[in-house]
Length: 122
Image (cartoon, rainbow, N blue to C red; front, side, top):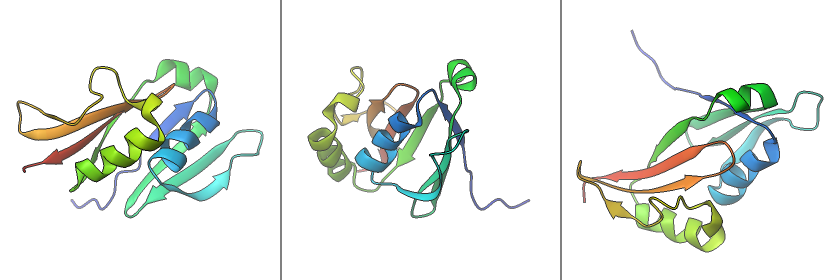
């Protein structure tokens, strides 16, 4: 059995919150856009990563996912995020921290989602 990609669905009460996090802060691009429809939806992508984002109040209230984004240059990502969107840094992991399992990590949070940015090794 072979899989080539995992594409999560994330539900927001207001899709604009997702766009701030993914497009403005993390520099994803909108690959598919139905944002201004009766049932707002879009796909954001960056490289080989894709995420389906839906505006759906009921499902957003039921689901509070956490994602991990793995990078090979956490210091660069942290510098950009902390300079442009410091309000998204999670208060419990707002600085790049070497974790007991050997990964460097920092975290973001918005109205719906937790994102841990992670780099393995040194």
